[in-house]
Image (cartoon, rainbow, N blue to C red; front, side, top):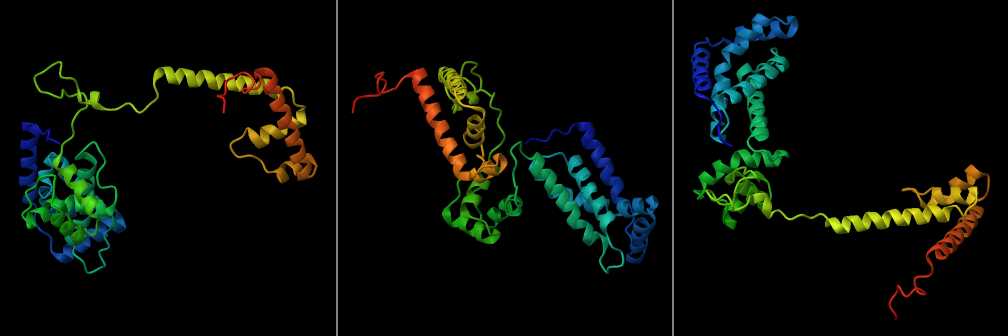
Length: 298
C-alpha cells in the first residue's frame, strides 16, 4: 500500500518531530509524581507534561514501521493512542520507568494500525500470524534470503522453527508480504483497453440462471402439491405432521403425546396413518411415477 502523504502533511510532521524533541526529559521521581497526579486527581497538566516528555518515544517507535508504506503522521497518531493508554494504566508505585511500560502499549497500537491498514485483506488474525508478519523480513535478512515470494524449504523451516508456526504459514505470509493489493477492475494488460479486467478470470460458482428458474419453479410446485395433500388430513393429523415433519427440529413423540394428552405410541400410530393419507393424496394428484413411464425400465 503506497503512502498518500502530501507535501504539507510531511512538513507538518517534521515540525511536530522537532518540537517533540525539544521537550525535556523527566527524572524518575518527577515522573512518578506526574503519574500519581493524573491517576489520583485527573490532573490534565500533569498528563500533558508526562506524555509530551515521551513523545520522542512514540516517534522513534513509529519510524520502525515506516517501511510498511503508511503515512508517518498516522503512525505517530496511533502511537499517541498507545501512549495515552499507558498513562491511564500505569501504576507509579511500582519501581518501573514509565518509558519502559509505555513502549509496549505504543508498539502494540502501531502494530494493530499497520495490520488494519497495510492491506484491504485482513492479515495477522492470531498472535502467531502477527509475530510472523512483523518478523518475517528481519529473519529473511538474517539468512540472506533473496526476498522473493518463493522460499526454499530450508529457509521456511528455519523461520517456522524460530517463530513457532508451520512452514505453510510461512510460505503463505511470504507470498502476502511480497504482493500488493490489486483492483479487480484493473486491466490485465496495461495500455490495452480491450484486454479485459482481472475480475473476468473469476469463476462464477453459482448456478446458471436457467437452472435457478427451474429449481425455484419445481420448489413452488412441490410446495403447492404438499399443501393440497395436507388438506386431506384432519386437524390432529395435520398438527402432528407439521410438528414432526415440517419443522427444522422435529418434536419428539413423547413431547407431542404430553401436549395432546395421549401416549407417544398413539402419536406414532396417528403419524403413520397421516403419512399414508399424504402418500395416497399425492399419488392421486400426480399418479405413480412407475406407471407414467417417468422411471427407466430396470
